[in-house]
Image 1 (spheres, rainbow, N blue to C red):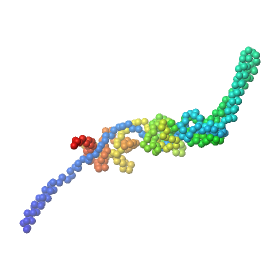
Image 2 (image 1 turned 45 degrees about the vertical axis):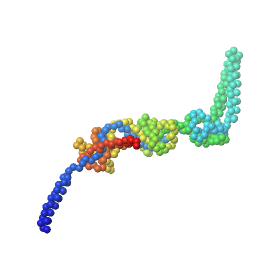
Image 3 (image 1 turned 120 degrees about the vertical axis):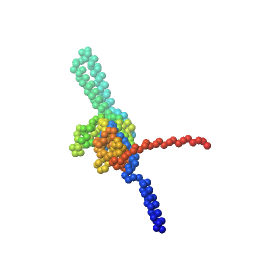
Image 4 (image 1 turned 60 degrees about the vertical axis):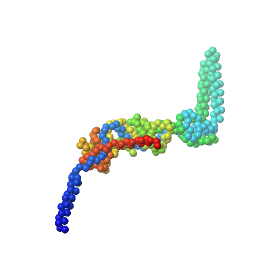
Length: 356
């Protein structure tokens, strides 16, 4: 039994030593991490300024009566689109019509008398002073005729400009007085968009800058226009200045009073741009992994600027031509070797099967 143990012990020791020899040597380098990278490049960049704005009509007015009179006829319906000069409401004007006929007859008579006396004056049959008096009479009757026409025109209410009418506020038979609202009228072919920005941005705002606007009523739809003017004063309480932009509205989707999100675009400039997902943000610090010539990565602190869809501007820390890790940053450590992931293989098209 003792001799058997002496034989087995050397055999077990040999087996253990051979098994240990099959393990990899301690401290051997791990395989490179598979990542995707992108090259830092200088691209055109336009800074943006965002604000909230209120839509206003290009022209807006409350159509009102000018005289005390009764409505005879209403020539529009709620929401009608009318042209400039369209007759909206006719008011009763019987007395004015009679006065107009009387004034027209007086003017015709005075004009005829003047023409006759002019012929007599040519032949020296009447003094020149009599002709002058008749001329004054004729001009006086013409003035009365014009005044009567003006009073009569006040009884025909027309649209001052083309636009969309609101709800009508009168009906046939309504007695209106000066200032009585007939309806609202808005020209919405172009929308004035007013929004406020802090005074610190005055130096970067100017008429003609492009803007885009978005409304919650039309998700995903973008309305474009440009800055028209800046207010001449800064609000001393809010220290903000009001900016007015003009938005074409041919389909009349936008209406006065709507709240819009505004983005003002500044002139383009060149900027270093990297994909946003390549940046690792920890509190206020940001860094990326830059690939060195030997295939290892180093952690680089960066200072960021503006952001846009999927991209971010780098102000400090990188140079054009640097390669940064985009996908796979979570598993990386400084000094680790990386390898570029192969491009995704295109799925093969299914082969046409043979009949039968």
